Image (tube, rainbow, N blue to C red):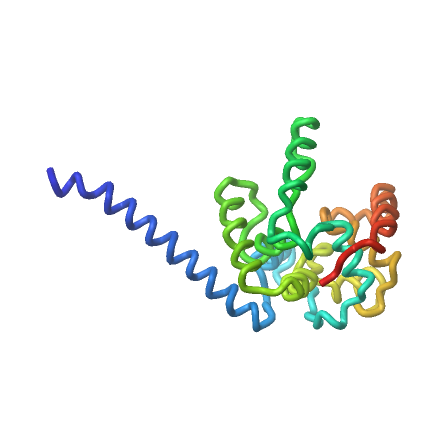
Length: 231
């Protein structure tokens, strides 16, 4: 009986050990990618698997470019669109999260997320799009790792190179060539604002490039770019 009574404790300790090992595994990758550019991400793996269900030969379109070779207009557009307080916060925009909660409650459904660039990067690098409490908790842990161990510029550089920008299109360079036939360094203000407007729903806008909502969003982003603080 005593041995049986010990099993629940052993199970709990075993589960805690597994969780701790997983966090250490994540930490190892965060440390590695702080110095070495990621070749792929969890989101890329998911999208590639989806594409290959229809076409076994499908490949992602992506090309890493250094931070200095990405247009400053695109940097300002992304900050203005996705995370205006990026250079000041420590990973979480609590005011933005509160506003998102209030907006979702008013609409009766999830229409705003309030995620910062750091949170979005954490999700893209390691997690799935599933909106579960476990994923949100893990996202928060990874975000703290990124903010503690990386500079703001490194976070932003990796973000700009790995986020999804269309069906199988990842990163600023691939996006610039996919939509405009130019490099990421050559993007102008209007082009940058339009690309930034696509980020929340990139595959939809890839299929519907003349959507009226995108034009409105782009105009708003363009007006805000002048005040965007870029690392």
